[in-house]
Image 1 (cartoon, one colour):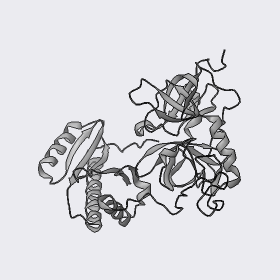
Image 2 (cartoon, rainbow, N blue to C red; image 1 turned 180 degrees about the vertical axis):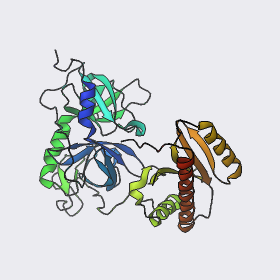
Image 3 (cartoon, rainbow, N blue to C red; image 1 turned 30 degrees about the vertical axis):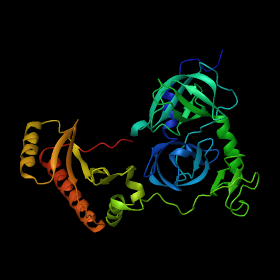
Image 4 (cartoon, one colour; image 1 turned 60 degrees about the horizontal axis):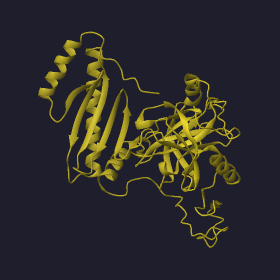
Amino acid sequence: MSPYNAPLNVEGIIEKFRNALVQIATDSSTGTGFYLPDYDLIVTNNHVVKDVERVTIKGLKFPKQISRVFFTDERRDLAFLSPPAQKDIPFPDITLGTFTPPQDGDRVLAIGHPFGLNYSATQGVVSRAARVQNGLNYLQVDAAINPGNSGGPLVNADGDVIGVNTFIIRGGDNLGFALSARYLQQDLELYRPHYGKRALACPSCGSIVTADTLENKTYCPVCGTRIVFPDADADAVPSYGTALKIEEALAALGYTPELVRSGTNQWEIHDGGVRMRLRYNPDDGFISSDTYLCRLPQTNINALYQYLLNANFTCRGVIFSLKGEFILLSTTLLDPGLTAERARDIFKAWLDKAAEYHKVLMKQYNAQPILLEE
């Protein structure tokens, strides 16, 4: 019988991995990563960081910041990122469970940030311990692996990483697949001598290739496969259109665009006690803003409702609404001739108006501050 069929200590495993999990975002995708202290690297999927050389990362014990893509393996769908800048973070000792191979029926836990929900975990079992896909062995599991879980760890009952959550079969009933940790360990050991350099695994022979080792700057030195090496200066900044103007406007207001991106054509700004979420819809050209001002008070709610209703009749261009316990101030913009300068002025006006209403609601109606998720 497999040693991992005992009930999972779910709370203990989640608590252990909370500090190791990393949220990853580019301008076109989001995903999960996890930090391995033995290698001083963040592990994730290649498809999470595809075509970019810098991403934003955030963890429970460190703020959102820029991370470099150190290594990519397209065939195995693995990527390694540079660690957080802080050196005193209490990361847990995460180990790879490669010495006792998982068996069919082993209990497992898939951990990640699915759909933007922080630190979520789903339980399941290994349905097939050696499912071959594209010439690689994957662990087929019935634990739900959802968008955002990509790159997160698959953990056994001992709290060891036995796989990297990689993909699902759409339309399948909990058909998730995690790359075996033995492939991860192989790539980690191959990359170790090149730590800090931009490298990739040759898609044909799997050899580690750096810009310095490319033969004639074009071919793998081992098998001769043609390799297009990534541009070390590549960035995820939108190259044209309204999204670029939005980011230029945010930069003019003092925000680092990469650090306020929350997804494709989405940005989130924390300014004082308010949280503004910007979205751009390229299909219809609208820019929308939903600003979380505060939470409902414990008492005198009727007076607050009356104030919000009256404000909705007198305010132009903005509207108050409730989302659960949150009070939101929303507005939209459609400006085909929008410039970065005009967007800057409009966003500043939105933030100033939000700060004004935040102050009124907090002081006059005893509204409660927003509680930001860890």
